[in-house]
Image 1: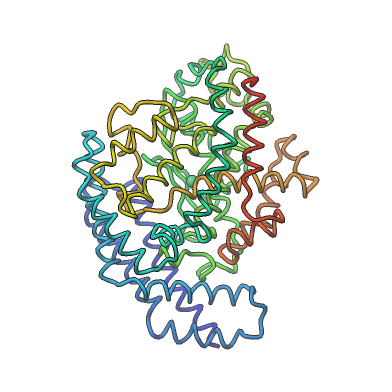
Image 2: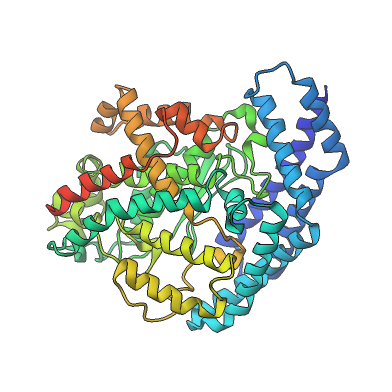
Length: 507
Ligand code: ZN
């Protein structure tokens, strides 16, 4: 009985957070600019109500009683895990003072506005005071959460449980050792003809083609929709309404398609969570207070990266789908063969902008951000010195000079919305995607013939069975162990990139 009561309370928390997500979706797709301030208040209010409901005496009483009621069940049963997730989140929120949470929520709206204007003017000094307070609040949050070695570890734990500064150091060292020599060899090889990507590609046809691909992957449009935005994202309000967005550039055929393939990967994760988990602790992030059903930011990112990069950037995918692309844009691709397009689509070009980075240099953008965040949090890097440190790291890791703050330290939205400690998830997602993809091919004989024929059902079914359906029931490493027999292991990712780009560039 107590468990039913506990579920009912969690249902209310879920409804509040899902409603808040509808407001977030609207603010990033439909809302006129004038709505910013009141929308920020509405979202903050719903989030605060969800938090209060979660930590209320009644919820805690029901959670404790449910815990006793379920004592005889296996420790990893979905019911016991749901209660354990809620208990961990309640403990987290009781450690973090409400005044601190409120200040963080308020700052998010003003800091984001300051960032938008600073970025427009390419002037870091406009954003600096807001970032300084964001870092200060992040430090207070870390102290409230607690940590053993480094305050950054506490922040990491809210996005990527299991990741610490130490584990990231090991992971990044392996990636640098495995990828740096390859990037250097490619820099000396003749580049592909990327000019073919920057011809006329009308937006409506890009949208139609992108949707066909998303549906071929298995993104269900009966429970989804595609809209345009500035920074593409996926958002769900239960598994039955999972929306994706992208951004169109009529002079570039890659941007929107890449966004759609990526967000469709996130979307399929959410659409395939066990229906029994709807409105429970297993379908929402009760620590971040965000209605997302994937088990960690990195696990979620592994699915967007798997569909975007392992499937959508593969040679076989383009052998099958290039005729459709060419028929969609006959004027621009008449003189371009499949092989030429495939090479251009997979070009390696170290550049300034993370979201436009190629698959091979992408992680260098992440590693330098993690290094800078960590130094800001422990105080060894002052906010005022950030542009200089950023520019030096970009030159060191990517070999390019940063011409202005807009294309440098001001390019990402994350810090303006208070996200410090989330960047590592992108690289963890890349690593996890390659590991899962290799395991899928090795463990299910139907997947390779499916990919060969353009039938993505066997791969999607395997991922649903191993990852999607479990929602937040298992941790990232538990899922990896069950699916691949190992915890996070970068060797698959490094091997994949060495094989693919060695062959593409003949190096
Ligand atoms: Zn993503």
